[in-house]
Length: 254
Image (cartoon, rainbow, N blue to C red):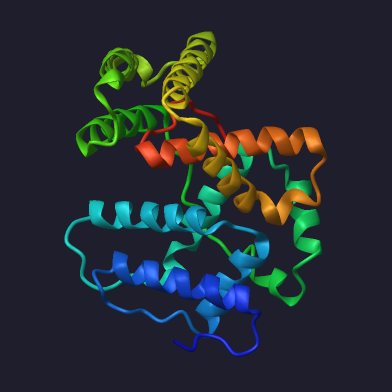
């Protein structure tokens, strides 16, 4: 599969992985990552967007695409960029990676590709009611997937009840009431994540730690030890969510 001629082997591999993932999402229909599309995806790699984060952005675009009804044609990777960059921004904020950190990491690896990084559209921010609806759906999917053992049932039932109550009053909530709801969502998120962490043995934790460090590798040189340690833990937490299919219950603005 020849998708580039002058890019580094790592970037070519990154683009091949994106192409293969897009092919699977398009039910086996191959949409090549070549030409301008190759330059676009190369810029993701140069920016340090981990493959898993790019995959989540592609997934988000397909969720919206499926939501519009039966598909008429395969999706090109260019149409997924806004979602990929949005998911990357969310991931970066969750891990405490500042814009300065990402800029410094880019300056050490990016040259002419920088011009394509910011060519994006806006998908808009998710509303609080829509967020709560999605969280409840994802919790149900996680339970039905079989990834969670029976010991999660009590936690999920309690969280789901609170979320259902929050959904009923979330529309139009303002001021201190909205802030209190967001603080409660953060507490529920921490509780669910702690329950997930408690079920990991030492080898699993070590493997997640190594995977988190691989994700953060493009930014590590620009990060002091303490911020890197916090980002590593946040990355591990996100990997735990991915492994178990758990949503992020906490809601943040912007």
